[in-house]
Amino acid sequence: MSANELPIGAAFRGDPSGPLPQGLTGWLARVADRASNGCDRRDLTYHAEIERLFPEGLFLADFHSDTLLWGVDPWRPRSSGHMDLPRLFDARVGLQVFGGPTWTPLPMKNSEQQLCVSCESIDQSDALFPSQWLDRLRRGKSHLRRGRAFRLAERFNQMILSDRDARLRPIYSAGDLTSLNHTGADKKLGVMLSLEGVHWIEPDDSRAAIEAEINALRAAGYRMIAPTHRFSNGLGGASEDCHGRKGLSRAGRIALTTCFEHGVAVDMAHASPAMIREAAGLALVAGERPRPLIVSHAGVRAAHRVERNLRDADIRAVVSTGGVIGVGVWMEAIGFDLKDPFESKMTRIVDAFVAVIDALKPAEFVEEMEDRYGRFDPYEHVAIGSDFDGATMTPFDVTGLSWLLAALAERRDADGAPIFPAEKLRLIAGENTRRVLKAALEH
Image (cartoon, rainbow, N blue to C red):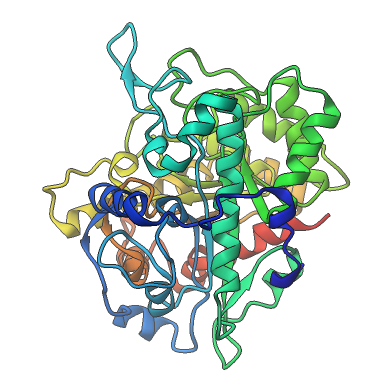
């Protein structure tokens, strides 16, 4: 599908004013962006150590950024937030996945006085879509969430249509990923659209209705879908829900199977442990070969023990499908304090990457993977999933990704050997992301 063939106009009609908020609403979105997305260092130069390690260039990919949520023009440089297209080009990124939630609940305390979220929580996203407030009153929440999903798709497609110099390559198929180059005159930035939370599908919806919704999202340009976002919904359980963390519902199984059949990657970033486990079982028997699951952005509980972060069992369940874990860099996932020095924050992020590798090293798991796939390398299942512009605080903006790779390159084991040698660093930087997405998009 080319940019000129995008069917978004037929799939959903937004406001006549266009996909980006204007006037007062645009000003409010920019204020929210400045207040919500901060970092210690921005506009960093490409790290000299990565230049030395990879003089021929490096394919760099990031699994998750919420930049389109804020209604900013991605082509315009901005002094706030973590990412825009000029900074992506400066950072030499080869593939960026643009995600977005349709419902961002405000945490509240449960009966045990623990912070959690639910469908009863205040939706912070309302502030970013003020033009839809009347729709909320007239048509209800389900229509509102669905409309937001297609509004985000409009923003993504407008970004592509505004590409006057043909610097972007929208990713709609496995072939689009194959043709991405990290060097040369034909180098382009691959961009892909992802959704967090299909909240309008109900548990008792018919198979035909569920399949139609997934296909409509695919027609709008989405190539990765996370069934849940922070709280449980009609498709299954989320990792932070106040009312329990259930597994896949019947509707969730239908939705995931439809994704597998139609070349839409499945993202377990906000799924409960039960949902991850059940989705992995479904992915392993989805066809002639397993369909790889993805965690686009997450922390690791072995490095920072909070409820949302992945357990070792969750990591192994995703990887058992041939999938990949995108390690995040934001404060809540990594566990640093805002006042911590930059170097300390980088150390904590590297700890999370090491924890993923360690979770994949038990002999029995390695043997299981070798029996299933013929070979197994834990380093082939780790990637970068920043969660830039996700109402997050990070040590760096997108220009700091090479600095993250340099921090990984510096880490040594007890014998003084690098834990992330250059050949493994190349995989983590972007090749794992490209390989697994390619497998997920094939159908």
